[in-house]
Length: 280
Image (cartoon, rainbow, N blue to C red; front, side, top):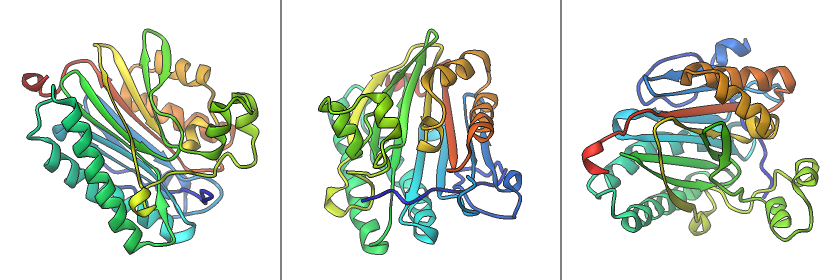
């Protein structure tokens, strides 16, 4: 199924907020959330007035979410917004009683919660869907679940490492050695998703757990960021802009200066100190 779009934004600092579209000016429709060690910034692209990206920064729960709606027009933003609104409640409730060292149970529970929500989303919006990248931080462990082509990266000691694999037809071609990364970036079907949230019982997320070190930065972003900014550009911003809020804003501004056709959302987690260290 072809990914059909993503757009939203409006500067605010509401707790547990979800992207929303308001006003005509792009700057007015950009939205942000800043915390001591995490931040997010989202800006609509030029293709549409409506931003179909959504995010949540919930540091007290250790939860960080980014979603990029698909399905076109209103369905896209409804799907991404519903995913963020509901999963930021569901995931902490299901995960908080699990010991961080029980990684298999943690990931199994994330999978079940996302699959169950995905089935419900399909019933509510049968023509729509959304990508999802979810990061749940517990001490030095970061549990990741993702669907679609929104990505997670880890920046450590000046080098950026991708933590997720796109669920796209073109990524399958790359894996098979049919095309290389440069050809994939120009491929006409690069937006065709093979998995996404809202594909019913087939909304199967990819899961992993990574260990964080002091100084690590974790970037969650939509394809509006990573398809415009190559790895060296991402590394340069993450290396030089020291605050999470400044780095998110710089990344999205750089996207706007280079293209800005699609919505762009960047969420950054700075791993300076462990969250909930007693549960590491």
